[in-house]
Length: 372
Image (cartoon, rainbow, N blue to C red; front, side):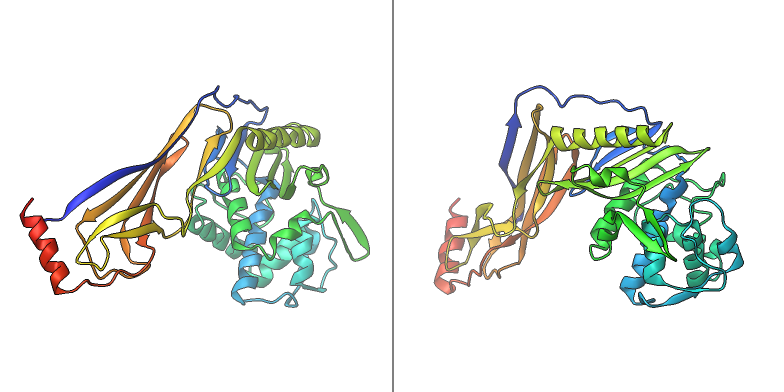
């Protein structure tokens, strides 16, 4: 029997007001990314390479989180402070030459205190040398979708070949939140004391009651002032990266402005939720004539809050569907499109079993087909 593709249009949503207000920034490079969908909501040279400065330490921390989660190291694993680490200038954790430092302290020295010395202690202890660790950083970055990043050190120390992009940093922020929910909260810790020295988190936006809970600042003469932030409001999270600014105050203002823009101008909707019946599809040879279907996973899309936009969903399946059918069996696909994102394609599965109706049911079904 010939198999025919059937399509039904299921969903359409349209809002009819003005488009989301445009926004500008003083940053030379900037991006705003929605966490749930990965959609870029704002882009200013987001794919152009830039110097990350201490935002590099997000990647160093990601490597540390990954090593902890995989069991390669433990929080009480310790590494010895080399002369190279001890002598490193810039922001410091203030480790002492020859001391053994536990990973749980190094982690906070990297994330909260932005210690260059802490980064080098971990890099050398974990990979042998900082250069070898940097190679691993670059490999891991590509693995998680940071396609335009090259790391030459663990700290963000100026190096012409040490580059990333605003979009790559937003991708790193997103992956950090997704991959390490058990460690990510360290980014919102306001201070940390090591070796009797109390230092404060340089991310001043953590204290402004905006829902911002990470991640990392950066500054060198070459890079200017930059910051990567992430925050959540009413269950929705966004990531913002800005770079190339002239002062700490300006980077905080620009990042906060873009964050508010993302939260106020856009909303997420779910056109498909696991368990919710999308349609009832015809079935041959079954104890019943139809089978209810749902998606195998939730679908989330992003739309402007008050803007003119629409999404459209089509359910596609191959006819005929023949019994028996088992709950969870793939029967088709749901294709969701909107102007804000690439097409999503989700598997559509049977909600419940449909048993074979037996010889008489088959006879009646075949007779009906022949008479068409």
